[in-house]
Image 1 (tube, rainbow, N blue to C red):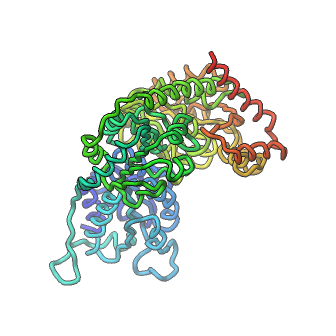
Image 2: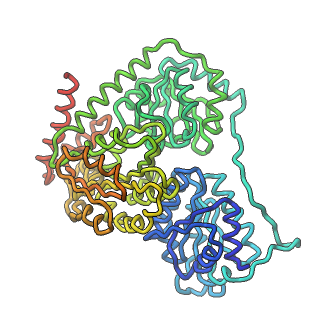
Image 3: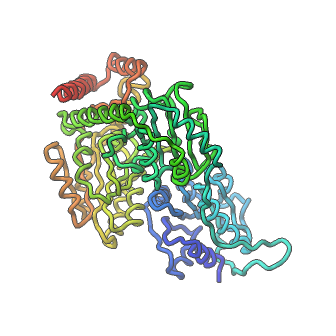
Length: 591
């Protein structure tokens, strides 16, 4: 048995069944072992960064360890962006990288980099193999640490050591003998701390709950606690699929991409319960001292990080909420809930009005608004960063049973299609939809359609839909230039080439649908979601539809007006589109 054979065997013993990666001579030993064993599926991406994103998606959607692989040198450096995505979103991922031969380490050899140092910041565990006897405990520690800490581990494997003979470490001084296995513990707070938290929550009259990705798997407990407290629930973007949007007390996303009801919930509450969230924009939370807060998180480093909590509970969300529930005194006054429900009713009408407002040629909000009710109950939706994330956050009304995610903490462009591929491999019987801007498609996601072309026929359900918002603009940054900086749109940095995405899909044997008429959207989504092959929907969308935040500050308004005064090339259209959205919403509200 070679060292590489042992590594593959050990990964299989840990439960690894799929690796996303790209080959290179520095990792050929492991690739040969994968071929000989035939027990772990290898999925070939077009780029190592995309392989890492696929591994992150696998981890997010399954809760299992995601694994990616590359050669050393440039293959490893390509992978690091996806690994930072895992780190910032607390997804367990193992990266396996090749390396120059151990005999030339320190010789400025070709593709020789100090990878353990390069990965030191992104990884909880990063080690380079230097002797066969290390292989056993390095694999065991890498998997166990990544899984236990919901973080990143990296194994760096010199090319020559991969091909050396493997023997178990002897029972002798200078050797260690590790084992396979890890079960997550039941982490819950002490009873006294639970009672202190209950006292805070029982003392509130207007309770708000903010839930993030750490609340996934605790839907029943969250609903029970919310009902007992008469609370409204806002969701951080990574927690979008934790609770469905059809519940009358769920106010949707919070933050710049959030909803007005979530803003109102945070501004008017007197008590706040935060569950499994690292939501970054603290300006959307209540002011210090205005409310008393309780926070629950499995990661103690996240406690009291965004808002000073009166009680911090280190524990698993579901288990902690179960223990907290009997200590809560059910609230009988339903006024707060009625206020929340009324605000939600008005919000959905306003959102529909915005989505149905005419644009040139297609309003991007309507694309997702039309998609949302047509999605099957088990659909998985991914989104890229950029303006499409606004419509994903607001216009997609997630149902119970659906799953959704995007690059949250890193907010990286280019994650939507590889996320969708990772999701599809994990759940080949479920339909998957990726919402992508044209900037991300041109950056790297077009190439990953070739990955879909390679594998889609082996999926039990072929439905894989990529919806491209073609507005020829790096739209999110354009609006940030206008609103945050007060600068007009800078054509040199913001304009991107037009490209025939639907026709490219047809070259790959997919169905390509081009939309430049909003009335064709519903039929396009029906067709795509019933297709017998992957589909690319290309929507010629209007770049001047403003992604209105739930609360416009005076600084943002001044910045926007400043960009117009300075001569924004699209100022006339921007003003007209914004006025039309606002006016249409007011008219429909009166109706």
